[in-house]
Image (cartoon, rainbow, N blue to C red; front, side, top):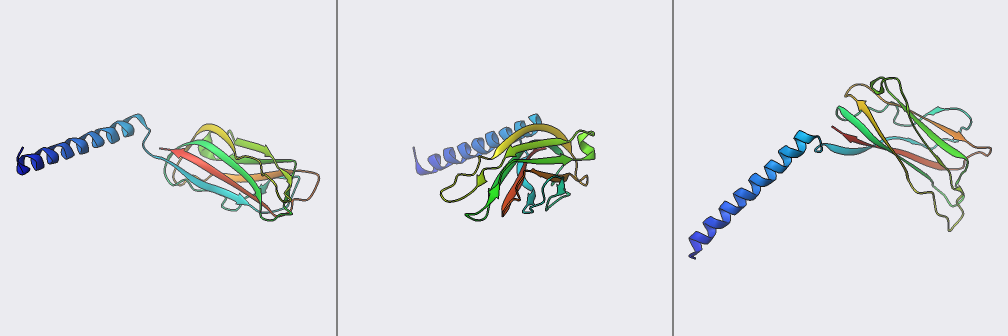
Length: 161
């Protein structure tokens, strides 16, 4: 094949490749798999126990309308003396959820003296509607008999839509 013919064949293949990619994207949009993203919904560094407290970043405003598909709860500490024991419960509430809260809970790892291993991130599958402009209130309950020391708690939402 001459150089010009090879170049023309390459260009046609590139065009077909782009068309195939565009068709894949359109199929994903059609079946609802395209716009999936995660975002930090709230954090908490307080030490109040025994009652639900507002989290930093609450109320959370969704970036787009769609569905909240998963909550991820990460419990950690910021020092070798960090203490988070008992249970950590986070409640997400929104008018768009239809009056039913999404609740995720996990146990703290206790005193984090070195070498310590914090608990794994806990994931909760859910499927509730979220709307742009309709906020999600995030509250946390540290249910423990001791006072937490330097907790660092984060909630990440996985969204689709």
